[in-house]
Image (cartoon, rainbow, N blue to C red; front, side, top):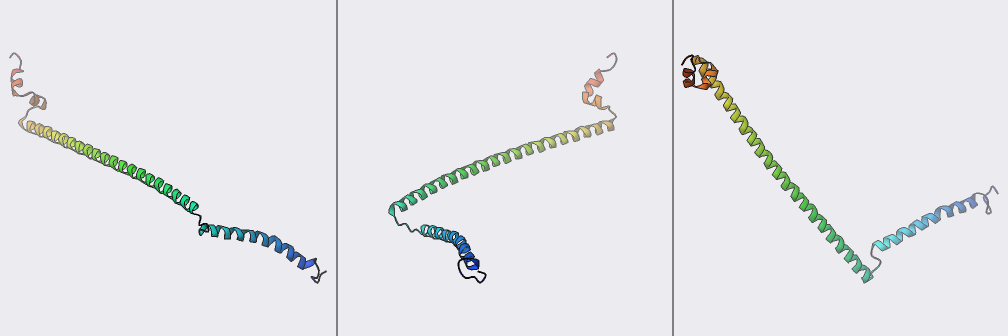
Length: 140
């Protein structure tokens, strides 16, 4: 049977392989056609359409509620961020004001020390004042 005649040989194998290959392809093609027919609205049943519309309305309502919740959350976080930013600005302002006051006090003390050195007074006595220096002497 090397000539391909009869059921054996090359011709027989083609039929076996052909059936093994074509059957799954045929089944898949049928599934695809069925799915395509359903997706294009092959069913014009009013009950199905009403149910689909009701389900879509429910999904839309859920999505709107989710969107509202997200927007409220964003608004809350933006408000909190503004409060924190304002608080930080206030703290920075107070810190800078305190630093400025400290710097001015240091400059004032240094200026007093320079003036007292120029007068020849010891800084400790200068802080007491002139009347205490006069009374602070021995015997009197």
